[in-house]
Length: 196
Image (tube, rainbow, N blue to C red; front, side, top):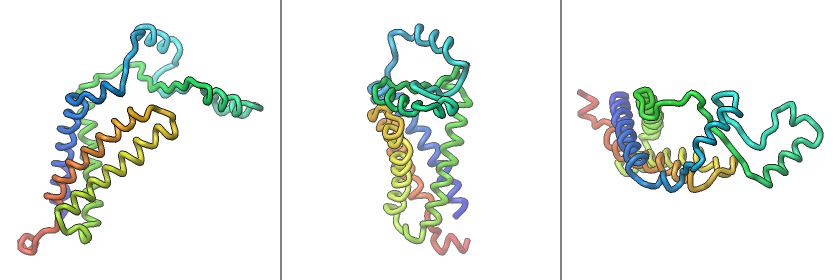
């Protein structure tokens, strides 16, 4: 079973890499939920002057010391209600978006994720005797990840729903495809195979 789980995880990670290249580069939906600005040079210059370095920045924001001041929390809540809200994930030093380390890190992440799903699949195997049930099980894990992680962000962080629905659809659809592969590979061995 261990050999099947490792093989299923490796193939599953490859499926996710291929699906990722299609989902993020071929399909047009990302261009419908992400936007640039006509003032890119000005925005970059303002960020470089205003932010001390790589990090996550929020506007409006009060640090812990400021929040302790009387009336600060109420003022912050009022600013939030009025808007606008800004959340900046800032990488001052830049990065190679298609560099080898990005793809290696992505593959390791997908392989590790597939190993976890394979372990869950092995634990649940007595209740999943058919290909269909195993495929559904893996798909539900991906559905859980997309809903629990990605679809929580627009609720708690007030970010646009269309962006996070697009983000969530990648693991949901990807794990559906991986489920079809893993269901065929990660399964109970027949008695003859056990004896061998």
